[in-house]
Image (cartoon, rainbow, N blue to C red; front, top):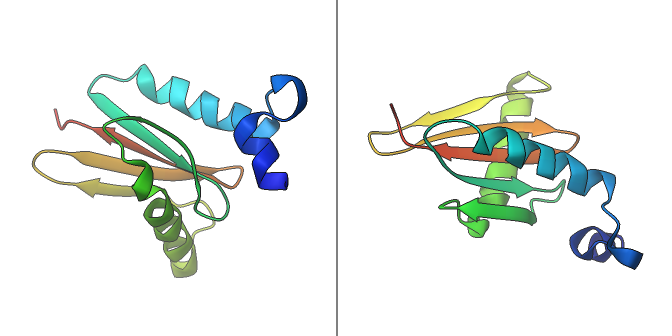
Length: 105
C-alpha cells in the first residue's frame, strides 16, 4: 500500500515528498539544452516517471547501475554513458535514481 500511495498521490492527490524530489529533478533536467528524456526509479527500481524518449523499462537498470557503482566505493555516484547518438547521465537523490537522456553536442 505504501507504493500505491506514492504512485497515485494518496488521499486528495497531495504530492508526497518522493514525488516532489522526482518533479524537481525532472524540472531541472528539462531546462538543459539537448535533453530528450528523463526516467526516475524508486528505491526498488520501479519506474516513478518517464518523460520524452527515456523508456520506463529502463528504470530497473538505472537503479541497478547506481547500486553497482555504490559497491565500487562511492555513496553518491554519477554515472555517464556516452555514445555517438545519445548520452545518459545517472545520479541518485533521496533514494530516487534519475537518468537524463541527451543528444551529444
